Image 1 (tube, helix red, strand yellow):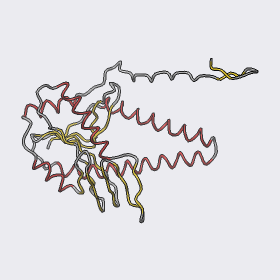
Image 2 (cartoon, one colour; image 1 turned 90 degrees about the horizontal axis):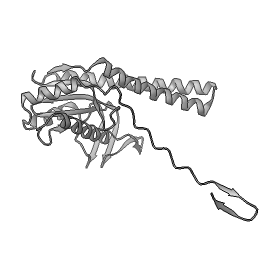
Image 3 (cartoon, helix red, strand yellow; image 1 turned 120 degrees about the horizontal axis):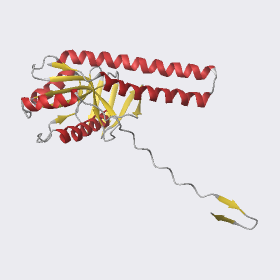
Image 4 (cartoon, one colour; image 1 turned 90 degrees about the vertical axis):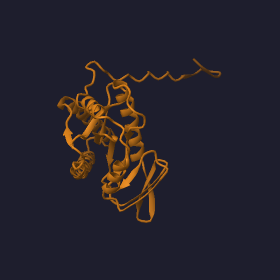
Length: 249
């Protein structure tokens, strides 16, 4: 399998948005705790958790990337691929984007340890004898990726087949998974993922594979694209007191 990369400029644009979110988080901590030592400790702990999760995720994605290299040379992979969303100035990231004769595969890799259950995209993890809800659903994230990629790629390339985009979630090191009625396939371990891909029918021509890869590789955002501002909220009615009664202005 051939591995391609997107432009450094696109990556820098996405990284800036991540850094902006981190800055906003630090400001939130500062507003709550002020200039106290607790505020600095909370910010440090937040950065530590972010770095730890990023390192663990990178190791898991790298190991899967090595396994996926055994696909034919005509197949193409992008690691940490960026694709546009419905917002013209926004991007979303996919752990591994694979393009081959059997379709496009948007892999979401979760290097989570322990036991997890899911029903209709609502996830829980086991903590001792209790099941605790997970706020960010991996399968909801994957179906979002699938929808965004389909909307974008079919708008730039005509006559693509139906149902050629798959967005599986892979748990390479989870101890136990119980999944029912989720929007996308979920696999415990890489072997079942590879089996699923192998069983998919041929659906893309070599020309379509190359054309999709070219559009992913050369993706750019419009220079003047800006986020659509949120509407100004309607002013609340102010109650003014007079000597006799209340009335609305």
